[in-house]
Length: 554
Image: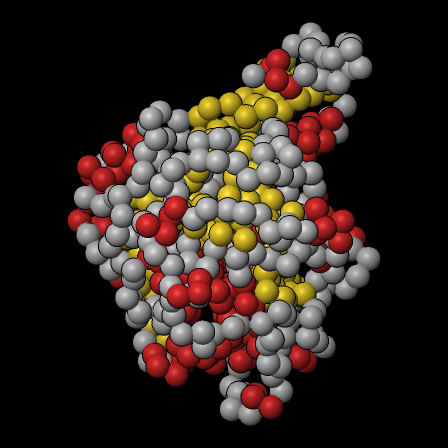
């Protein structure tokens, strides 16, 4: 295929290094080498801060070794999948490093996922083991594991471990109920066994080896797993390190969920790449996060702009609690200019956009740390310019390269772009054109090389930075016996950016209230997916062929 002939005006904003190389020593081609480099130089330095306790890099290594040995005892081989189904707790990092040591592949699972979703992901990934919190085992996973057609070994843990504050604002009581007859991660990590000889049993990682499977809904609404290789993770982590202008050995504030590509790379991998400490608080709570920032003095944070709105609008949060921050970034959706201005006015720091998707291992476009964000004539903030070693252009419907100002699909190419989807060759083949990743997002580039996000293709909803596909929600709604027709759309929401709305009609002689349908969906969908708004019509508008006209409902 012919190489797209693109221009790179963004090089006048942040010049690329010679030959387009990434501007750092290419010593890390896998995430494990990053960890071991941090271990060599910062063994006694903190790797994780979690409420009132800290874990050093040496302790993290010891815990990871013990977990790795247990995986070997369980028969986990190189290439086997191990699922991580938990909140933002230290055990996520410990288990990730441990499974990488045996050549296994991590599978990140949103802890908001319920029975139907968990079963689907474990079946698709064929995970051999799953590490999860007690509460999730008791309420969700126990039933799922009994129904799967392959064996999955559960290993339970608790958000109450590795700390003693037990802050009820971020740690609930779900983990207090013990799980009978299953392995406990605490027992594995507290064993007295020596791990000094573990090096002879561990498997070295190759750059092209998968490190993580991260599920994304993609363009079809059916979850599929992007294959994040060791090289993808190492490259994007080091891109964070080079682009954000943050010193090594600092602290990173863990605002984003770790199962999400932003948390996985912008928190976990970035911390390992810079030998920094990752501040974790189990789950997002504005006041808890502020207190952690005040205690551990982070220099960097990235998260959904809705989280920053929550921080700005909480009267109990003091500006001084965040005075150590040097760089603040947001992803998931372009931050509105008014929110960016309000944030800077209150905290004295600009909030900068970055852009990427699971298939680009996160970071692909970003506002440089030393440059003010460009704003277009309509007051829209740019999502950034291509980061080092990355190319981008805007494609027309025919695949042609569009000139500045023309709206089309954003196309990406770089070492952080994933090789494909797990066990899904058809979707893998469709994800690229002429070597570039088809993002499915619509935007434009201005004459200076700034990229602006205009809209999402087709009908995707972005609620609090999470992608929600209408068909998945509609399928759940249709499972209710009173439903005749259903269509799901996104509507503007001041806090979430967009929120999910369901428009339905009922079968004759059936009764169903808006609240009842919301409750029905809430039990079957992750928290960000279920409808917050329901409208009941006599009949939904349809085309001549009987297709529901979603655009007429907006």
